[in-house]
Image 1: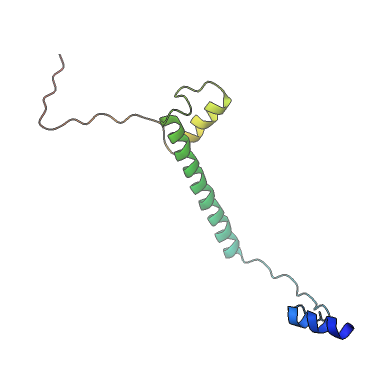
Image 2: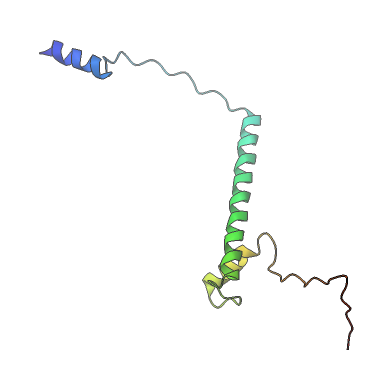
Length: 103
């Protein structure tokens, strides 16, 4: 019976487990790789904040959140929308051929 179990285990890819090897001491972290890791985390965080700001601006533009903050959630959305830049309306374009008089 044990022979059958050993054959089944070998065919299943389990195999016999040998003695555990001694682990090596963990290597000392390189300061350059640590700095690169922090830099990458900063860039990823900045990209997430920019994406959140764009989504918040779209929520305001499409009317899901009112243009004047009424409660704390609306203030949070407005704050996130202003992370990249303030909400402004673009000035209307003036065409070269039209005349503008200040009557």
